[in-house]
Length: 153
Image (cartoon, rainbow, N blue to C red):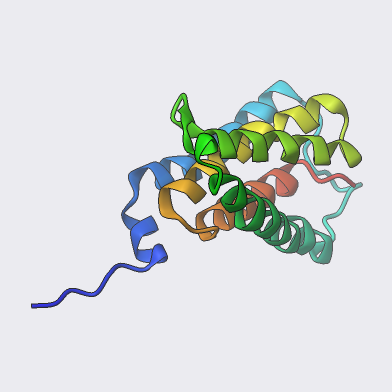
């Protein structure tokens, strides 16, 4: 009997590490909320839903398409960048560093550097599943929760 290969979505639904990565989002949001009191969205700063859709939908889609869909696979074409350091490919490390540098455009240096950590997670799942879909899902989910709690105003 011939079996049909699993789709990326089916693989993700069975990937325990992916579920842990999703769970990490709310844990980080809670820790940030406790660490940065007084930053929660209040009545004086209503959420603009169209802007939330940009921050949690369109921007992650475009960023992941560019960084994990185009750049990281190109870097993986260079054999030395397929090697791993602490389980992460050098291609992922370079992509994530560039991701952080680009975030300097809109963020202070510390926050731009902080985006490197989730970027490494996005890149690890891109490598793990040979698809940009896990990175898009994680990035969108992380942004949605983050901006829902810490609305920029």
